[in-house]
Length: 172
Image (tube, rainbow, N blue to C red; front, side, top):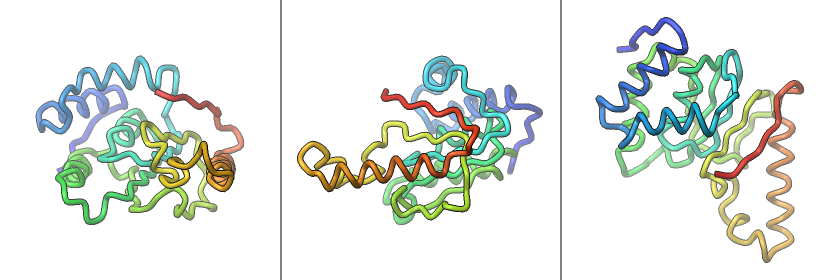
């Protein structure tokens, strides 16, 4: 039904209200605080291109779009054939927000992602380091090949960043 919202502040507010009303997330107000005051504090999404690696149902993707991102690409390999209701939640959100046309869900891993012709201002891989290459992640400390594989993934990330992107990394 694509609800119209006037600006990103209204969009974020409506997004949080929607999560609460539809029981999509257990604590939407805490999520809003976590995104605005912790995870993305001082990060401006307005007119930015975002890559969300392993973003699940798309909470970060929708928050970025609601905050004014011009394009969001969500990589979630579990999106096809998922036995849970997770992708139903994603679809419900897509159907309810006027800003959702900016979000593209791709059923792929980052290592399989063929985005050489795409450039991003922000790349997010939140609580999803295993989504980069799970086998390499598991064997990272014991295998030189796994270390090389992981290094190549980070090089790939660097190569798809816009030249003026603010490069930050963090673990939470």
